[in-house]
Image 1 (cartoon, one colour):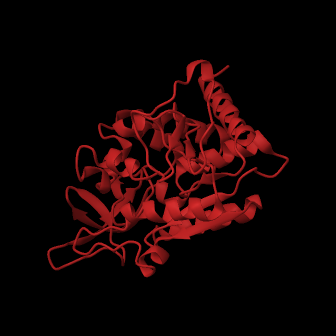
Image 2 (tube, helix red, strand yellow):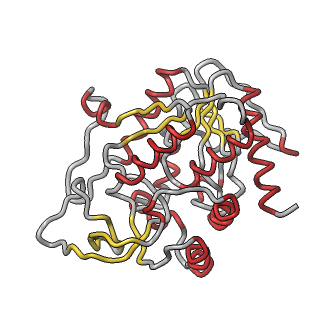
Amino acid sequence: MDYLDHLEAEAIYILREVAGQFENPALLFSGGKDSITLVHLAKKAFRPGKFPFPLVHIDTGHNFPETIAFRDWLVEHLGEKLIVGYVQDSIDQGKVIEPKGKNASRNALQTVTLLDTIEKYGFDACIGGARRDEEKARAKERIFSVRDEFGQWDPKRQRPELWNIFNGKINKGENVRVFPISNWTELDVWNYIKRENIALPSIYFSHEREVVWRNGQWLAAAPCLHIDEEDVVERRYVRFRTVGDMTCTAAVSSEASELDDIIAEIKVSTMSERGARMDDKVSEAAMEERKKQGYF
């Protein structure tokens, strides 16, 4: 078996374990390559039947239009259920306060909207596309990662997962985050996308767009980005290695318009995939602190 076959088999096994162990799971869908890969794996795990879970997207209102368009196309193509939680609703209800200022971002506000969505629909397991190679806090998590009744993660409260035996037992009010592609790398994902011919949003490939140089990285010159007289807007050929809120997801200069070009580019890159996320640069433990509060 090819190593991608081993990774695929493990992920399918985990998805089926979720379906077998939990009463009301959901698949967290961002419209990024990792969650799209999860959807592809779910098709292999459960077709010709329907998915035993809905897709759940937490929409900041500042997502890339290309990502939202792709999300809607994919859901229609699949014929599966999509649930959307809106950060704007959390703002309107006074549950969160929208940050102000030049570098303001709604990204961190997603946590409250996610936890409210989990509570509203009673999800006991949420499948996500996080991988251990992305960031050191994510490297600490097990494949079945238990959250307490407040949706919070305790890195010291980890269960052993010997011989791929996953313990999904939880108390009332708790839920589990499940990461079927936890053992994959960014390069594994791209090689799998190439092998399986998986469609992706156009922003993953080189394209020309207006960008602003800020804090050492290129940000899309979007209406939600606070641009002042100090900012210089340029048109450049860029692509995005990760997808998130437009205000904190940076692009990389690139002319890689084909999968082979992207794979070659990643092989020689000296910056990690999450290195293009401004929200991870707030502090050394930025991701871990957000996860403790209930983040993806």
